[in-house]
Length: 395
Image 1 (cartoon, rainbow, N blue to C red):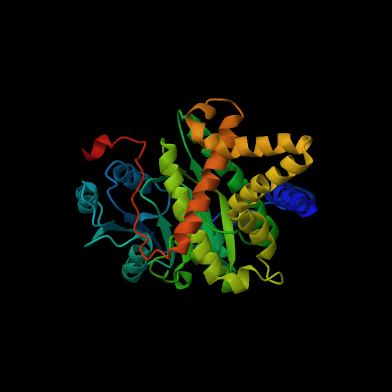
Image 2: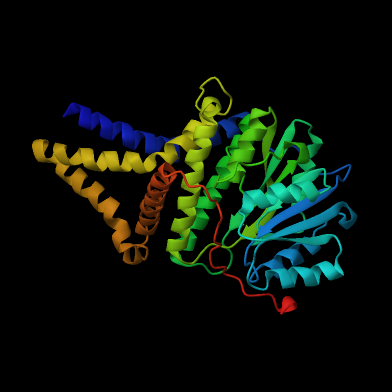
């Protein structure tokens, strides 16, 4: 029975390390070393040409607001161009974009016949874009005026190859699940900032908005779900830094329905395992620079569903044969894993809302793993229901 106890201790210790100890370590290290973002990333002496690339499918609810936020940028407009690839949209997305394009010639629409997928659309738009710096962004990620300037400023360092924006998910009045997801994303952004300050890299940019040197944007293989992580790793493997621009702020909505967030996490999970297999010789090599951050921040979290299940299943033989405290532990772990079954009630209880969402999203990662084993060949996506109304200006 000792080996079962060892399995439980190791599983729980790994989860605790990844979610509590690791963030504490890099926070303390950053504080101890007094690492702060240098002033050299605050101003731009030269404005390179920038191409903003957007893959859109049925985004009529947000595309007008997105383009308005681009028009409000403080970046020189003569240095900007916008390419919007419509992935065979069937709503008013293309009509809305065309109206903007007629008034602002630097906005261009490219229609793709038949569902193509984000990665392949970005691959195609890159060939038409002229910018020295490419900014890939989602239709529902709304810019603040300074976001492009803040992203581009980091490229004054020739060693920087890619820069992630600081995407803040969830604005205004939020539902219970959205509050939990917003808190999680804020914590993730804080971790990425510390990674950048300590190591000159982050383990995966946020796909909703990032900037990259044109020469470093590689083509993502067909069928890959997490194109942002794939491209991030390609930049790191090439020897460049990947920065986190804390002042490059933009906003993204959060799905109101937990089921939609579940499906999003499933897609992320599939992409996680695809990328880990593709870059395994680099990511899993302890002698490589990213290993510490990858193992601590990504790998353990990707296997957390298995660690939770291991702890639960291993606890019951101990409870049956040893009794005592193990009975309470087994019952507690089982109850924890069953919380998603009553999530609509549990999400209303302070404290339990975070625990329930955590377990539910880990089931999404587990389901994504089994989907990955089926070797999916299409990464075509269905956007979640947007939480912002159609802009009056485009009606």
